[in-house]
Image 1: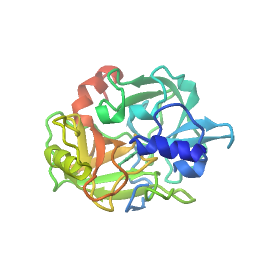
Image 2: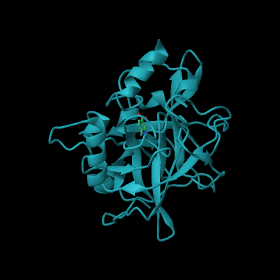
Image 3: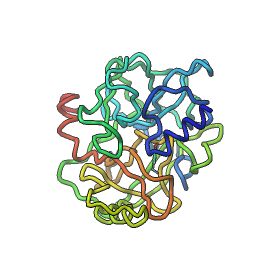
Length: 278
Ligand code: 4AZ
């Protein structure tokens, strides 16, 4: 029943929106088409947890990225209510194994983008302030935000990482090792047209809004449980956080690329909340 409810919610587009329904751990934890990530390669990747009374443990609900020693960027739809008590969340950082590390970090503040309503309407970003700064270690490091003037092309090298499902029907199996897959970024107009054609949508309304970005192809995509996590591209030898996993129709289907919050659009808002980044 809970799984059905989860599937019902997730088939609408975004995994964990709505009420905080406890879901068995196995059903929450894919990158589709991915491979095991090497330890330390993606040191900004974190896992967002909520407490599950049935499992008596803090279970993974979403990914996220460290953008500062004390701030994590994730998707707004990973936060159940705009005024959620930050103490109901924990962050796990610094390990490729989802339940392998020891320490969980406390969250002291949650800022959901004030214009957020639902993932497919945009503004799908939230900031989490950690109660304490994370120490600089080789396996825990913030990722750089993109400069405001940066154009991505299908030639850029971009990667997705996460502990989400490995297919629409299959959770990532134990030992829950972080997955990585390289993906191509598509132009918004191309992505919008693909979604329209494939879904038979006829109205004029844009489906892929300007604050979104599409990436992925048949067999290479993010999936449920990857939400909030990073899409990074290598720009002049440094990785930039270009997208936050947000929504999509199914996972890794032809003509339905994954849709991401376009981080570039929100750099001014992020800096305003966090103060200048180091
Ligand atoms: C989700 O709801 C979700 N295939 C994540 C990624 C995609 C679709 C949905 C993209 O967590």
